[in-house]
Length: 383
Image (tube, rainbow, N blue to C red; front, side, top):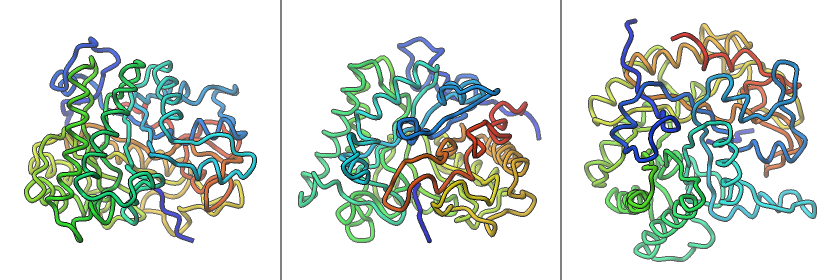
């Protein structure tokens, strides 16, 4: 995600991998005891290196530990191919890239130290991949389709093999990020090249995950990911039938009320229908809701006063209620988990092409002084 636009009890299924034997397979993982409470912390390393401070119970603390302490059991991390812009945006002060493989290694290590599993999100781009853009990495520019498909395989394999060798194999892997129009456009766009071509690229990534898994104690679950529930049925029907993609474990989708026509009250039905239709585990892999309409910096916020949902005021209490109700809806539909997008993207001196600070500080689980706010409590709620 990145858009800058100026009941009865049910069996719970989760990824309890860190408490399982190292030799467990995906079938064993999917049968275990707990719901996935995930947080995308992709910005955290950069924030910590640019003045950001996180506090809990009156003390400065490690953000990975804070999330673990409040009920998080999985960290989602984005991976860009060669994001040189993340260094260049700082001018002469820029010393390193972020969200590249080196940064991801640091984040996985810190997640492991905090006792958290990991979902690695391959964007297959040098920058944000989402429904508006799926840009081929510069290193792959000009490749023909066959070579591009092989590059997806080789890159995915090499990244995961490197992580496996260093004891950092993720428990989940996303093949693409919000790939509604396809990936690696225009060659991987279904509108221009057809569903079979997109399916070939996705299958190349999946095959790499499975091949590396043969030599790893951790067998990552494969997630496919599109934005907004109203797009799920059509997209997954096309990719599984016309695209011939079947070897994935989790049907993932983003749910942001700001951009969706589906009310929160219908999410349970959608999740249940997806499970029944596609015979896959279902998970919301991106979501968020604001706790204030105020700004902590001059970087304009993405969510504003007009984005409030009925019954959920844009207040700390409203954010907490929204997250609890959404989580209940996923559970009631038989979903596997929820991942909140960038709940730690607090204001700092972090830069991107659109501003300095954060366009999301009003959607985090921290107040403007870096203290944990009420929204964080949804993970530890007694469901």
